[in-house]
Figure 1 (cartoon, helix red, strand yellow):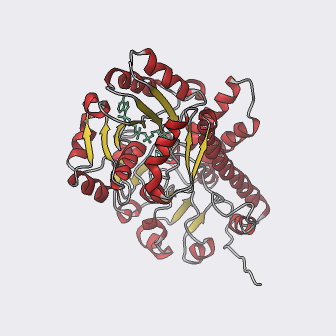
Figure 2 (spheres, protein in one colour):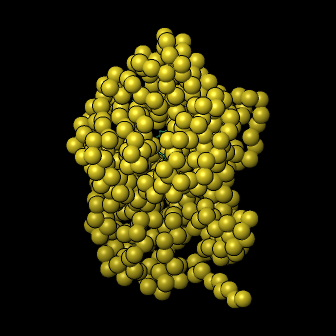
Figure 3 (cartoon, protein in one colour):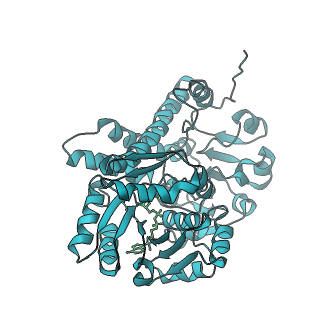
Length: 439
Ligand SMILES: NC(=O)c1ccc[n+]([C@@H]2O[C@H](COP(=O)([O-])OP(=O)(O)OC[C@H]3O[C@@H](n4cnc5c(N)ncnc54)[C@H](O)[C@@H]3O)[C@@H](O)[C@H]2O)c1
């Protein structure tokens, strides 16, 4: 099929590359000339394992094109994807301005009947608005909007595109829904067909549920710290119950990233607008806010930071295998360290450039050794493999004072302490993980 895509961010680019990989002809549009120039040269502006190779292959085989020209992207297309951002707006509402602009631009450029596929995460009713906007802005053609929310995980996006748990397609015009289903046939992933509004809500409900699991286990971690239990043993013991499952039961300093915070807020705000107070989600957000402060609270308890203390911030991306620093818990920690006058060195294997947009004057390094060298305190924010593979000896050798506050429970507390590290993590009260199973 001939496809146009609005937006070449994490979602639009991965969608475009993967659809080209299965044989479709894809033209990706972005308003950023810089991104398009990079992409035309076969280089991805975002880090995503496997993406560059697949991008280059499909450009070479002439199934994948990049442009800033809307006519090239929207003329003579059977399907046009909207994959622009929907950032947090006023009062936590999703800011739909980019979606509205894209809809108006599509209306002005299409040259035939078309199905518009909304991949951006959007509140209930948005697809209806997109369809109305295109019709109202002068399109003489038949236009149907279909909701097709995206469930990729940054860092695993290519894998998820080919091995996702489900593809959700929501629409009220059956032929349009079937057209989108046909597009996805080569992926061999179960397809959930539903109405537009339910599809829109499935995305928010899924993210809100996962965020709830995280805040839940973080509350359990806090109880563990008070009572002397170990949250990893509790999570493992709970998760073995198939009704619960082990995923998203990892205690830490709370969720961040470009989706969970904004999507949970958008759902509470959408509910409030509909006249319903989503009490549980308000609590999930409140717990997450408090959890973001946990490491600094622990550091302050130990009077770890004074003016001029050399502090290493280990990990800036909101999770490993991505360079995305949007809403990363590292931001709060760095702000607080700056307020307390610490001398900060920030480490990340790939996300330092993105973080420079937030803190241009910070000292950055891509070398873990350089970051901890001479440091008096280290804060672990992202559980990168490069950090997890270290031994206590690495920290005692390089740090001036091996005092570590680990927000991702990367190490065994017993091993760290016996290795000479002053080690504080989340929900483990200094105890090693102890659990055995027998049949
Ligand atoms: N990042 C994720 O992991 C993820 C996962 C699932 C869903 N989503 C949702 O997908 C949407 C996109 O997220 P993202 O992370 O890819 O955003 P992003 O900010 O990385 O990318 C959006 C892109 O759209 C471009 N753009 C803006 N207006 C445009 C226009 N009128 N025409 C063409 N391009 C335009 C921007 O320049 C940018 O490159 C959001 O709604 C997000 O919530 C994101």
